Image (cartoon, helix red, strand yellow):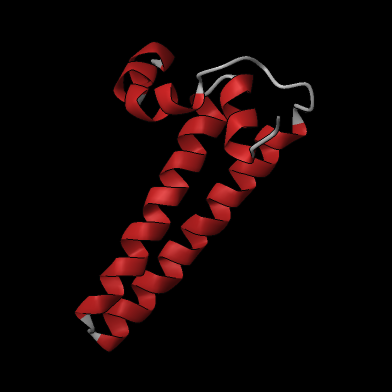
Length: 92
């Protein structure tokens, strides 16, 4: 299952998995990345709630942006290597 998901999300993972493992990587960075992904998912839910109440079509823009960020955080946090997690944080 993990191999098929890795192949499915290879365009995202391939971007972050280039290069070598930085010196400052810690395993807690992965947990924090997953927490950030969860927080963006909460923002998606709140934005969707208010978009449905107000009926404004322009409210779709934050939903798409927050969903994209949350998807990248979850994919890199769950399927990515340590190098990908370190690169998303900008650790050098």
